Image 1 (cartoon, rainbow, N blue to C red):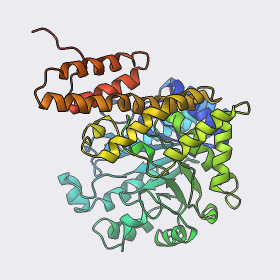
Image 2 (cartoon, rainbow, N blue to C red):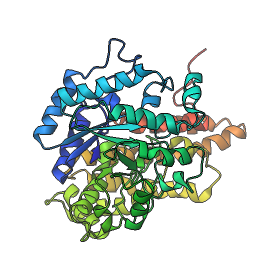
Image 3 (cartoon, rainbow, N blue to C red):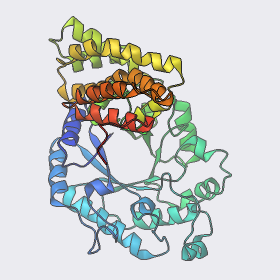
Image 4 (cartoon, one colour):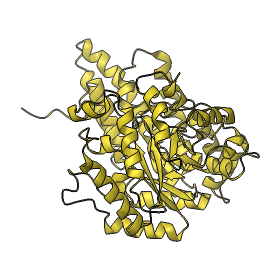
Length: 441
């Protein structure tokens, strides 16, 4: 399974789905807002599944894709969901029934991930007490009893990894574990492994978890490499092959969810390695998968220079987690000589490397890759000028304006690469440097 990654009407999302399907992924994780609307706020006349999503779903089913939709009652209603009020339950069930009947959605997740573990609504407190666990379980039990035949239900509780569950004695964990038996045995559990972002996942980890959860089916929500946690304008992408996953986890989990990074095109490298692992867990080798993924992205006709440039960039960005440095963070580190010098290296190496990467066969991946590289290069070129300008301005020197003019010239040189120019503007603003000539008063 792979996350949809955005609105199904967006060409970039459609390209992502087609790419994932070409790798062998056969199921999609879709958030409720991507599939339609069910809350009173978004659907005052009742739940709806728009025609555009139904068409998308039909195309997916023709390609053999199974569809799962995740509903988060608390997040979707901005914290206004009342568990003791049957109206919310009715809306979820009606939405699920529409998804099943009109879009062929086979799986529903009731998710409470990253939501409060204590209840604040007075009527809910009187019904369930302060812990949110009994309320979550009760809603899952009621919805499970009303889902259309053939629709499978999953629960992602507010504790969804071993670190959250801990000893099982916490104010949420204890009633959660004690109340799990109230759910039908067909309800599966969504789990991220030992941690929210698990450095490694082994068979023993998951077997122990399944035993604690009553032997229920597990959907492994693998937050790897969790590149979407970095700022959208970060200078580095996630180019890390899947690693430290025990091949025997395939015998423990019922489904595996891959989480693409942002932007979607940049996720193609890691997704290719995840697909290799899922096809042949026992034979998976991260380095070999890395090399094959790079060869696929470069294309069979790639020159030696292009292959070398892509290999070098992957080495630079092949770390988990990725470097979160962005334009704003850069402006706060003028005092760090080693950090500043790393941009000198960027300025000298990136232009030739970017030119060598232009012929990459996978143009979707290439475009996201080069956009990120140009963001860093734009700031790298302006960085020494920014330091010089600020030093002269602090000293009260009249020639500070000369350096500022050079900064403005540098900014203008990026006019054909708007994202790089925007990154440069963000950097200058964070440094307290005007991005354009002063306007007359």
